[in-house]
Image (cartoon, rainbow, N blue to C red; front, top):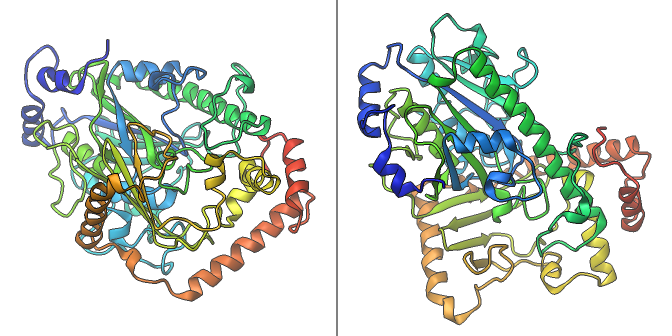
Length: 498
């Protein structure tokens, strides 16, 4: 049986000894430039929720991730601070909320030469200063740099020494980020272990439709393809004799690329898998339910390496049992390409509070990326016009959004019953409303400052131009009707690239 967090904190040890984790960190600091420093390998996955066998997903075969979880800690309440790649990656890379450092708008920051505010820097600089070899690479191609996607001006050479740890000096410790793209759309078929769409269980906010079953099945198959590649990366550590002195982190940049997932603040967009293996220092088969924000990764990595995290970091070391657990998580969604929005949320283990700053806009605002890649984006609109959606599904098609949403996650894990107008929850609503206001003020949320209208105009023009090109590549008119586009989706092999 997996060990719980309480058991873990009591038994955390170094090898067969009984040294506590804080003592271990202290010893690391004293020998920060010595050979005992661990390597750190971050397996960086795109667009994935914890839909693995080790997290209870019955249809998915993820033996390598299950093994990794069994050899370390499986975190069940890990989240990102943004539900889309570039703001989330900007936050992880700096240990700062993207809203604090002005990196909150997805690939549309205020100017192309935008610099991080002082004293903020990409954390690999701290590792380099302590003699670590820092890499950023793409699995399967040791010369490729992998996905960075920061929302600030950054040169690869300013934070990384190479693309693979085999480029380092002999005996030099490394901090390596290894990127996997498989779970990003378009999904990749798993010819070895295909998943039957008829066996897929869709969330209740989705209509039970063959097109969506196929889409979800392909998403799960992509996870299986990724799992095998993760296994190859772990095998490489073993073959090179690095496994025992390498802390492995497996995590996603945000949630699955589905409606109410990526680009939204529901759990489908911000909840991520997080697995950590550190031989000799972490008790195997441990399950931890503490709330973790991905900005906590930076100080955790630094403490592992014996580096004192700078005081300005907004995350904290989640492996140090002396640090109190988070009571609240905060996340933000702002502009995503051409789609203007501003949404904020506060989450505890029990409740989720969401504030929609533009309630006059629908959930299903036009977004070229989703119209191009998500069959559900068109299907939901067609079924809405036909009157074939259930009341729960219909809410997401409304012309307007409520200013506030409140969900009891214990009784409503799919976040479909908004309690914001329920008098019984008036006190709870007020509490979270105030909590979000405090966070916005204390963290200097730059979403409060309007963008230059020229930026919005640029992205509106740019994305529609791209949309026209993409549709022409498909042999379709940009003005195709929803019904005709749906027919195209039904005849489409969704795993094909374009």
